[in-house]
Length: 556
Image 1 (cartoon, rainbow, N blue to C red):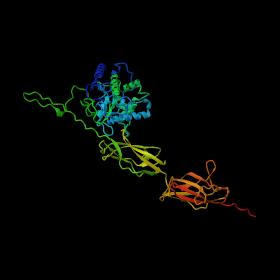
Image 2 (image 1 turned 180 degrees about the vertical axis):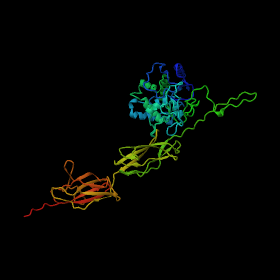
Image 3 (image 1 turned 90 degrees about the horizontal axis):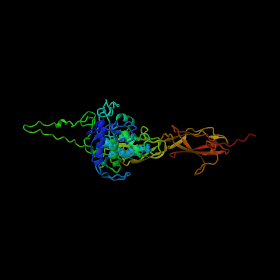
Image 4 (image 1 turned 120 degrees about the horizontal axis):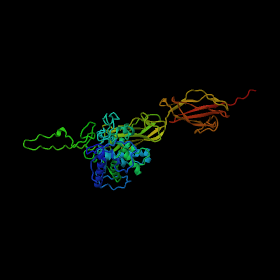
């Protein structure tokens, strides 16, 4: 899995014995080491763990066997409030810790029965990559340079021919484990996830890799609160009893308590360095182990002076990258009131600013905008969630928000992607479509004989600011001829779906052309002149006269 400097225990008969002795010695002393062990071959060393039931996620690549110190934190294993101080080993870089916790929450939402603990992801991340080289990731959680395992060409390691044409590991001949959780490309092709919502599945991104590892560990019907299932899950990641014991030791250590530290300041196993690239180099995980690394050209020894001894050039110390700035909060950047009429776009757009711990604007920070609530409003393109990055000034503007047909209020949240930070919440309001005018489309007299139906249909058109008002709600009521009219109990009427007499209709709406054609109107036996009032959302009103003719007197 993680590949770094240090001795690699070779595959073969000696692997089992050496790995067992090394782990036993470290367990007894409690001293941290940097021994890099291969996972292949030693799963039979103890014969006490259940056999793995999945293809190993990492191809049984090497991993680090350094163990936690004896002075472990003394927190209850169920504690959720983490201490803010503690030993260096107990600290987990902020982005890395956030990724593990986010993966735990995401998996719990879809596979609660698995009971995935984030501390298990932390334990695997520790032995695989030293928590992504001590948290050396950018604001989006991607490692500054790839973390690559050794070439799996069968020379000391498993033989796995290329499965990704070098897309992930840069090797088109053989596979290599990739990223902070050290997935081999073929496993990533099946289990890769988009954990930070940026639309990509990147094994070099800690949010993507942590979620993929969580789902991989939860494969099948595993319940990780059961010891046997947890052991099987870890062994499916790397077929090795020594690996299981190492992961278990870190798992127990982190369950007793840990704390967040700034990205880039985590404890890195000796020799891990600042990064790797796919090209062979003695100082990269993919290189074959050698007794001593070849010194760079700048450190070539000077020729000996006459009569003197050959001076020894000190080995150069690689510079430690400065801690990366991480997002500490997301703030409103001046967004105004969010209101729109149904079907229209909101004139105001949501704008936020990402800041670091010192209040400085943070560029290239990932922000996720999410629409929530009982609404059919969407962002441009029909999406209800989008992820964007802040610009050079630390701000980012959400896409245009478009109201649907549902009226009322809903919320939009803007949050730092992959971070457990408070979100900025906005309330948006959708009002009903309105009309400021309504009138008949013709001037025909509307008459009917007593007990008959009106021959002509009532047709009206609604407008708003002289434009067609489509989809506007309209109420039709037969009213009395009084100073304050109310529903009339006699005269013309409508019929409901059951054929019953009704004199008020409320489920009316103008069409795409702003036109409304009323249902049939019937006359009762009382002759006279009556009024029909139509009222739109927005308050526009028209009153229409209906005449019920008096019965004709038969000729003498």
